Image 1 (cartoon, rainbow, N blue to C red):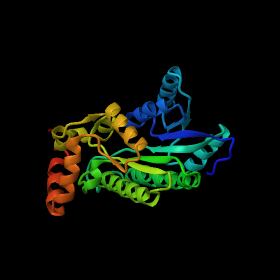
Image 2: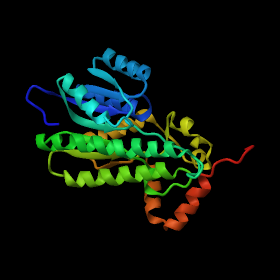
Image 3: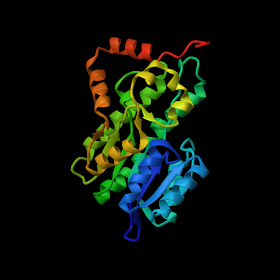
Image 4: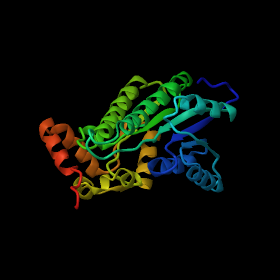
Length: 268
């Protein structure tokens, strides 16, 4: 979407109902730019919008499921109705599923792929051309250190994060020098409702690897994004994990992850 002179810039945040997305909205609101917050929970979005407005920010909510094939059109229309264009896009929407791929509902897994990868791609490709034309703006995609390894018992989730990491890096290289930036925020485990929803908190890996918190992760991500960094892995421990994952032979890495991320047996 190209902007006419009378349109004002906006920061668009998906997944703003909870977790990292909600905290990114809080941090980004300090920039003084209008915020369009997108999520599925009307109550949660209403609460964060009210909090931001109470602090002097300009914000509005758009209740929307990114599985809707017209989600991109609806976001673009919502911006136009408010006299806005997307100056910064934060792709934070996503979820995970824990368990063997052969046992988890197929539709749920396809929906995970659709939300975590397809929707992120569609929105990026929708708004990036306008940013390049204007010579300003950027995209912040929420990836994960899980994108550095295949993930037995979270096969589709890990694969989507590998895609986000790779897609973001490629876009960043393409727009280099254009005035537009693309950043991938790739944290390790973060203490949010994500773990409760997909039950991955029951795995050995979740209990061994220390978790970050969402506010600190968001602060680091937004700071890196505004600095034009291609990749932000907030904690040293998680940066080390990413390096180890790239150095270990794939067979060893797979056995290690499979052992640490084995679903609990019945009665355990």
